[in-house]
Image 1 (cartoon, rainbow, N blue to C red):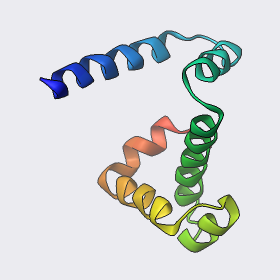
Image 2 (image 1 turned 135 degrees about the vertical axis):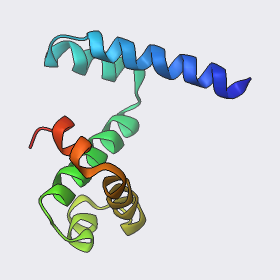
Image 3 (image 1 turned 180 degrees about the vertical axis):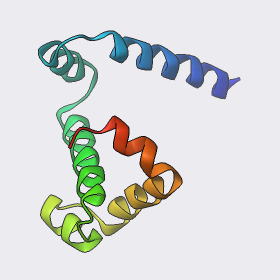
Length: 92
């Protein structure tokens, strides 16, 4: 039952995010639903993916963004599952 509830909530979040039309409104929305730390972490995760797509080394990324190598490795593993799809979604 918990998984269905979580899926419903996730689908609602995705739908709401997709409906936001401007950068300004997206920022406002994210600032309301995320803590400052969560917003910073999400921003770093995007930068990790962008840098991995540019073939930066995992160690270099971890050092530059001040994150654990495991965090960068997680991003690299996700890219291995579907790099082409991710590349299309992320603006370089």
